[in-house]
Image 1 (cartoon, helix red, strand yellow):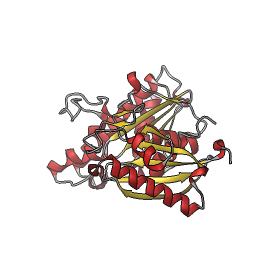
Image 2 (cartoon, helix red, strand yellow):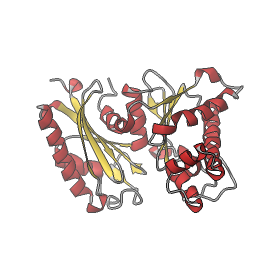
Image 3 (cartoon, helix red, strand yellow):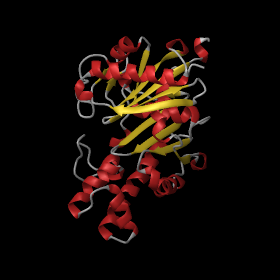
Image 4 (spheres, one colour):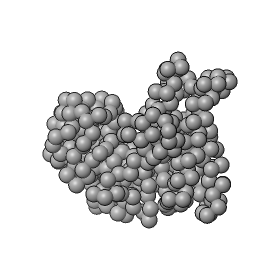
Length: 306
């Protein structure tokens, strides 16, 4: 089998859980598994368990390492993509020293490529999901925080030294308390599940879902929190269309499982008010791949050249 026709392994690393899948060159997920990340045990332990997972997936599919072209990994940043370093002691404590890619390559005997997890999710959606045949594309994921990624002319948008853009930290409602990044009224603090929950706890709500349910029942304080979130995504949409003019904005993440239409409607209304861009050419669409986007996007790092 020629290497360009081979399979790859995609790994989506999370702070708590890691997902790992065997993917064909056409973007078909053959099989996958999940395991505890347990970053505090260190990189060598993680690399060993990833190697065990890879062998298990290959055995289940009746394949061998010779069928693989490589391993792709999506991981929360900040990252040093060249050296394979993870610089995120908040989400992945224990991985601050040593190269993750070198360790996994040594444990598996396979070449490894590393990517930011939000970028990996976008790559997955553009490969076999909602972003297919669209360009430029922006993706926003609303979960505990707000992740964001941009693809233009087939390439991920990167900043100086390859840094990943932190779209979730753009200020959308100045005058509020600063978040952990020092930004007043960031998109993440207003519109993410974690941000809504944090603002809701002083008034007796345990999580974002409880806030949305109470808002539907007419609870005034809950309605105000939801309105802040929708105002925030409206501002984010306005910034996106004028700064990047994407062909589509993909909304993903756990919060979108139940509230996509609410967020999308607010963003679409903001876009229709734009007079200096071709607003009718910009769509707001739902992510299609769910929690498999990161795995597929990481795997695609070995097939994008095609």
